Length: 175
Image (cartoon, helix red, strand yellow):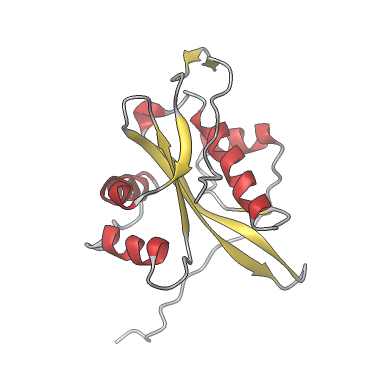
């Protein structure tokens, strides 16, 4: 299978900080999942949320690699030395109002030490390619209102925001 999410690096500088010359964004492989789970825990802490429950790498393996058809897609930013600097997850979703599907980006996270290297645009290009390969016309996502760096990044891409609150409700009633 061809890894459609592999992306080429852009020019060597982004925001004044040198970009890794061979960094790329690619589909996660099973051997990446322990690191993805670590990054997800860091992401939760960054967003002031509860950490993922133990066993996240195993749950992700089932969602990404079967035995059922994949319900989730995971992209990773791989640095020239093989380290994973970040991850993005996405899945097709439905819009009743549009009567159409779109690609929902659930997470996009870069380790703090790897920000400013131009990996964000590589992720977004890979997500666009993923949506296009699935025949989906757009990508939708959300970010906390306090995450000003992410908001500036998304605005620079030309993305538009819609004010909304996101709710969660457990399926089992509280006891």
